[in-house]
Length: 547
Image (cartoon, rainbow, N blue to C red):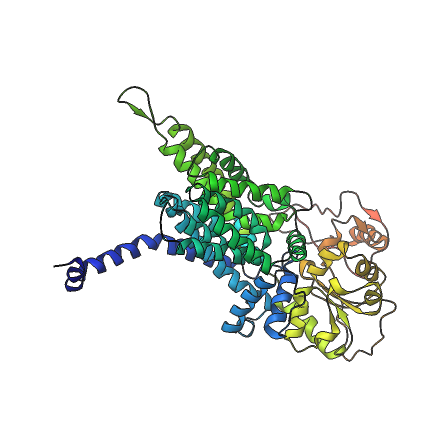
């Protein structure tokens, strides 16, 4: 009886093998779910620098059926917009930012699953694969980079899938996986050109199999695909856009330990035949991230997952590397130092990760403020040109405002800035130093309405040359600061000093609780001068425990 008939008559072995494969994949699925949940919890964090541009690109493709700039990572916006259109993400979510971050969460979870697959294809242990995915899931640096709407976050799963297909110990096999890997790598590069840094890893994997004709054929196919889909001008523009945002030093403050471990692991992995291809790609991305004028943020977004895998792989190699002290005695000379360094790093990393994750999850914007500003604009300035940041542009157009009367900062010239009203959000306020025309217009503009306070402050400004429009709704005034804030400012009204001098002559100044002293401290070094708002009281009882 043939093996086929045995399998058909007794399906239990096939079911058993399928169940066993599913059980082996459970850790990867669980870690991918943790990755997704953490990023969903942080989905309402404020817009990152440059993220509003990408949000506007996706929204324009989804809602307006056009691209704001077809020469900048257009394939990335098409992929994200395909998801938002198929799932009605902009309809289901309260804000456009939450809608467009949903596919980023799915991309992060997919990255975790593919990272597990790549680790197993590299011949690494399951605990190494789990450690790599866990580092990517829990690191605040990885969370903040993967959460934002970036073309690199869409390209990373394509690149990891290509590397997983190319990483094989077999010299001769069918050509189909190699062809699919080339296609995936082309898609990754067209999605985010910074993933070209991983082409060296793929080329080394193919070249060291010793099949020169295969190497030349795949190189020709890759060059043809990228050459047709990506021109030189578009590549330069994509690199420039990717570099817009915080520098590598600011990003690494979120998780300096991972940055140091990744750099050390990449250098050490060059000594390992198995890890050398991945180390080559990681080092190339690290160099790009610190290169002046290079795609720093984009390179960091791509390198964070491979770097986590490389750190875990180097730890495994250190723990399992063996040698011989004699003819029959096997030793592991790197076991003790590797374990000591890994445990020490873990002891420092876990508290830092918990603190960073808590800060990311607890950082939320107040949607009521933006909704109030949008409502006020629709009631008072329905057809007046208004300049605002890209994310708010999407919200205003999504709320029914015509795209022609909502202007983006990048397309607003000096004349536009002086003749258009300004809706200054926290995101636009952060970008004003880089937008000279808008900064000058905002400096000389009149504040018409203020919504919210503190980090959520939103202002409606009218430059001197802007159109004067009769307002139907009274402009909200900024909330008065609490009176307790005036004591630390060390400014006291002279009339208050006179009152304090007279009051003790007739009666006690304050009723003092039993457990407090009678000392009332107003300021360490008061400055006599007029109040910012005359007639506003600034004093309140201050008591100090006697014990």
